[in-house]
Length: 339
Image (cartoon, rainbow, N blue to C red; front, side, top):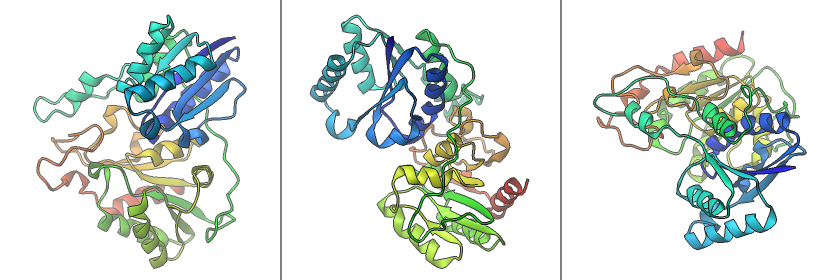
C-alpha cells in the first residue's frame, strides 16, 4: 500500500476546507493510506475512513523552533516510510519539513498559493480585481501533482444528532439560525453594534431561534449578554467541545458568518451560509465550499479588498466596507430559510 503524508498546519478555516478534498481522495484511492498532520484540536473535521489516519500536534507550543521541527520530522519518519509528502500549507514550518523529507529521497509536492495574484488583488493602486482560484481547487491540484487526481470534491459530513448541551434546546422546533459574529482580525468583523440589531430581529421573528458561535474568552461575555437579553437566543461559546459545536451546526437552517472558520465548518454539512465580507473578498478564493455568491453581503467600493486575511488596518480608519444595513442581512437570512 502506498503511504502519503498530507500537511496543513494553519488556521481552522483552512483545515476545514481541506476535509472534503482529503475525504474524496481517500474514497477514490482506497489502496492508498493517507496520514493528515494538523493541529490536534481539528480532528473532528475528518471522517473516520479506513485509509485516513489523523496525526495531531500542537505546532505553536511544541514545534515552533527548528529543533522541535526536526524532532517532529524524526518522529514521523521513524513511524512510517512515506512514499510522498503533500504540503497544503507552504509556510516556513512545512517548507522545512518538506525539505527534510526531500533530503531522505521522498517525493514532495506543495499547494501553489498564488501569492503574487493575491498581492495584486489587495493592492491599493493598480488593483487587479479578478476572481482567483478557490483554495479547495488549489488543494485538489496539489493532490493531482502527487499522482492522485480527483474530481470536484463532493463529500459532505453527515448531519449529526442534536448534542445534549446544558441550557440549550434538545429538540428542534422552527428555524435554527447560527450567528458567528467574531473573527481573528478587525477587518473581518461586522460592527457588533449593528450585529446585535440583526440578532434582535431574528430572535423576534416567529419560529426562529439563534445560536451564537465562535470567539474566545473575550467574546464570551458579549455572547452571554445577547443570550440573556433576547428570547430564543443561546450562546455556545466556551460551553461545548468542537465536536458538539459541529453537531449543533449540522442541524442549522442557515449560518450567518464573517469570512471566518464558522463559514467553512457549516459548509462541511451543506448548511447554507450568509456571509458578511469587509476588508476581505471572496475573490481571494476563500468562500465556503459550494456556497452561493448570492448569499454574500458586501459593499462594492474601490479600496476593497485591502487585505487577504483582514489583518491590515483600514487606510481611512472608518471601515466603510461594513456599511451594510442590518435589515438587509435579516431579509437575506429569512429569504434563505423560507425557500
